[in-house]
Length: 300
Image (cartoon, rainbow, N blue to C red; front, top):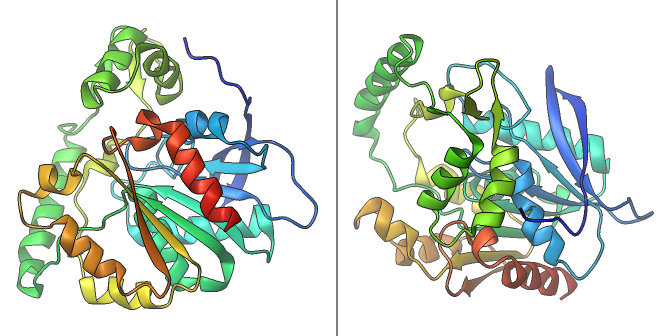
């Protein structure tokens, strides 16, 4: 099994009525705000371990389990982007006070970070977005069908039809991770599985993600609102993408990498970097390269 080079510390802090689970690495440095790293959908804070082990600097890092993921429970039957943004603001209040932080987000966490940096531009010193592309632009005429889909999925959830699969052994969880990401090595997969799932009283291993996360958003994706937030980002942005084109795989031409790059032009100070031999989970595939990109950007 993978052996971490930098051990993490686990703690729970009160945020917006929830018992939020947070991992931290290193010790606080007087006069310097922490590096905050936020994970993606159906992931956990421990997912950053490989990148943190590859950092040249022994920096103070803080990473939360988002609400309803990992050890942060919520019990909601659906989740909205606004809650993640507010959770992040309260987390920064707790761990950094008024100081501006360096913020790194992956996938969903990258999307949250981009929107947050537009809401609270003064809170972010530098921003790194790993494969947080946003969604295809929606038409207002899509709204009625979207609300109907949302209601139908809520009913399915409460009938128990959207429960997450449980596995008879942790090896099954590791194999699931490697199936999703073929570049993930067995040692890392087994280590991640021990943080990504837990054993229930009946002996089965369950994924640490609440099924409410599988519910589609009730609101359509409003690109005009997103770009308005992008325009308010004052921190320099590094948008990192993997050589494997995730957008083509996911959206089949409905939303392309070129369209994403066009959106980034709304950010006043943005640059793009690419990680070779990597897919969407690029922080697992090439942690040393991702760590180097992050540190060089922060030091510039």
